[in-house]
Amino acid sequence: MEFVSILSTAPQADAAVREISDALAGRSLDVAVVFASHHYGPDFTRFIEPLREKIAARNLIGCTGAGIIGPNREVEGGPAVSVWGARWPGVRALPFCVDQDDISRFETPEDWYERVGMRPEDNPGFIILPDPFSIDIESCLNQMDESFGGATIVGGLASGANAEGQNGLFMNEQTLRKGLVGLALSGPVRISSVVSQGCRPVGKPFVVTKAEQNVIAELGGRPALQVLQEVYHESAPGDRGLIEKALHIGRVVDERLEKFRPGDFIIRNLMGVVKDQCIAVAAIIRPGQTVQFHVRDPKSAGAELQSLLAGKIAELGTSPRGGLLFSCNGRGTHLFGKPNHDIGVINGAAGDCQVAGFFAAGEIGPVGRRTFIHGFTSSLVIFSEP
Image 1 (tube, helix red, strand yellow):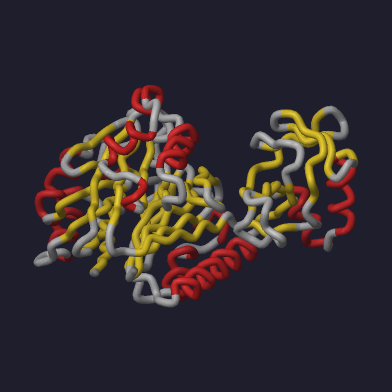
Image 2: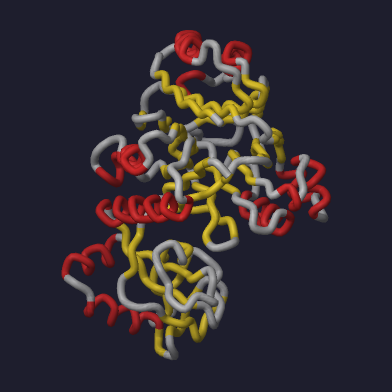
């Protein structure tokens, strides 16, 4: 099992292709994953066709990104392309594509089995790269979870475009303009995920006792706004400032847990106060669910990623060999005030792990046994020996 990550910042497509192909000369890849900035477009066919030809990869997927992540650098706003390659004997790797017509037409899991070429008994894992303008990704994730229950599904939404048709999705020698491209993997490789949503809890968990759609009326039998005000006044001065400008709410994904820890919540934005004593959330909330207020700041985001990654490596019992990183385009220098934060954390924890990725318009990864689309998140898929 071998992995490699290459980054080029050459301003011209032909120079970038030449630089990457020279770096990969003599390697035979079972899979290549390509992330390219929009500087090499708008006709990415002239870029992806010669790249596929010269790097000798059996299977290739990829997409465009507003920022590109290489083995030890995050490039924001400039020309860049990263190529991540894997050689893993015995692993089945099947590229596939899906569009909105497929999502609307698929009626049973058999439709998905036929499209991706695998079934649940294959224990597959998936990397998916959707275009945010042309596909209902939440419906897609729901269908995939129902069809492949428990499968690890990780990815990121193509970014850097302002309208449908501007992003590029790469599959082998093709450049698609809508839907999603993906890679189904099965065989002797361990596929794991780390989903760091960049938040920490404040206050304590509360059970929702009254709610309708996305509006929470009561927490623990009391008006939701009153509970929030108490959390604010009981918080440290520094946390009060974060509550004022960066407040979120986390919903527990698995209510069977006896104790809730970071990683057990799906984080969503708090939209505001409605009807005097109610709070609106960017998610559907039901009575009986457990929620907790959260705040986000650079220190918390960095600490959570370090903690979750260290815990995952300890759980695996071995350092991962390769990985793909999907980081929100609101992270990077926008959140941390300095470049290369997330890739630096990963290299610090797993220095031999070959990683590439991009800054996404939405990050995909599991919380509990369901797959979600996230914001301000670092979603990492890592590969290790079985």
